[in-house]
Image 1 (cartoon, rainbow, N blue to C red):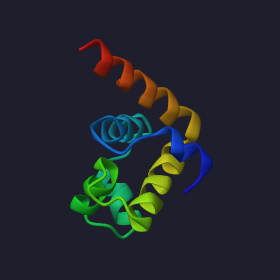
Image 2 (image 1 turned 45 degrees about the vertical axis):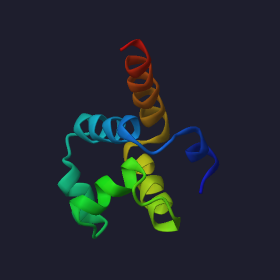
Image 3 (image 1 turned 180 degrees about the vertical axis):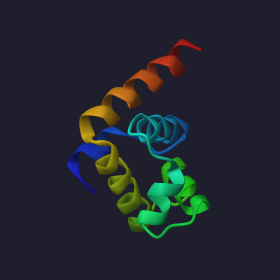
Length: 86
């Protein structure tokens, strides 16, 4: 697991940040899944923490890198703030 990934908990906030980031890049989650030879259900299981072992961590790392660390961090913090405000 990379150092920056330790700042993010898998779960709904992580998943929503990924979806927002992938849309901001003009892509779909299907594009990312196909590129990484994953089923969409595996992608969701990894982002929400259902798969939290080495494979889940590796996939989450790829998700963050696909979006870019800075953008993901911004989106994650914004989503977390929205969660706290609710």
